[in-house]
Image 1: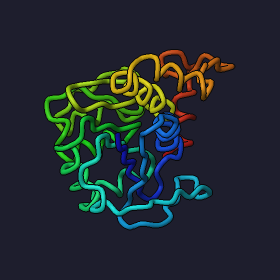
Image 2 (image 1 turned 90 degrees about the vertical axis):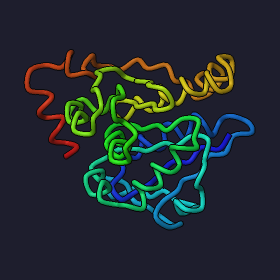
Image 3 (image 1 turned 120 degrees about the vertical axis):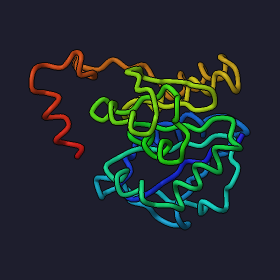
Image 4 (image 1 turned 180 degrees about the horizontal axis):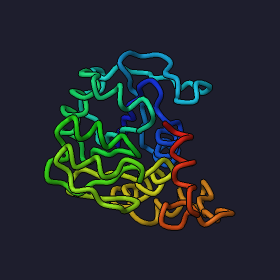
Length: 207
């Protein structure tokens, strides 16, 4: 199974690295970072750089496509090479997936028309502009398109797909290997549980 994770300037690191870590643990699976050209791509904080080993055109038909989100998504929507690659690869992939605002790139590629989809809570309603049906869930599957909510939800998405592709036992083993057992110190990971004013503060950190 070959997983291709797209990179573009100002992506959010965990959007890409979370699914990468899950899939890379599986024996016999290959995970490749792809970008406009092979080379370094820097995240939204400007401090972390991932190395793309292939250009989009070098990996036209991966088994799984992962598109991260981040503040750079707005500019990436105008990147025809990226959007066209998502559209083309999506026709061949078993699953085309996104994390956070990466779902907007799936929408730009024409993959969300009439489909249920999710994104970061701060921009979820805007998915309707791409013909999608916005759904406030952590992971949303509609046929061969799978979208995850904000940032950390990419880990849940990857484990879910791993369970279907390789069996529950394998997915459970990976979850245990990475000790993914969330016990956050605060109950405010959703705007539904956040104190008054906190959503506005949170959004100011990522715009």
